[in-house]
Length: 85
Image 1 (cartoon, one colour):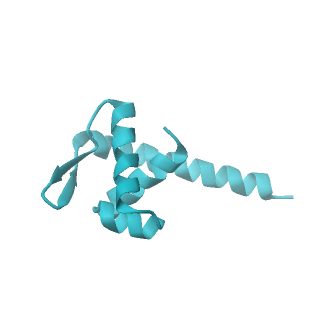
Image 2 (cartoon, rainbow, N blue to C red):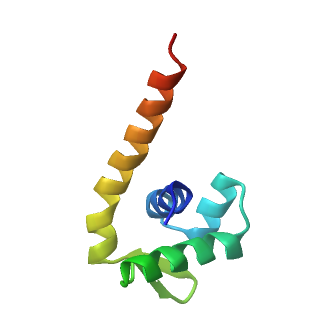
C-alpha cells in the first residue's frame, strides 16, 4: 500500500465513480481499478461493491475513508513543514 493508493481510494470515494476519479487523477480507468483492487487485497476486504456500471462504498470503505483523508492531510502538512525556511 502506498500513499498513491490511498489518494486513489479517497478520490474514488469522493467521486463515487472509478471513471470520474481516473479522469480527475489523470489516470486510466484500468489503472485506477487496479489500484483499488490492490488496496482491497492489502486489507483483505472489499472497499467498494461493483454493480453493473456503478460502485457503492462498503462498510469497510466507509470506515477507511476518514483515516485515509487524515493520512493524506498529515502528508500534505509534512510537506509544508519541510519546505518552510
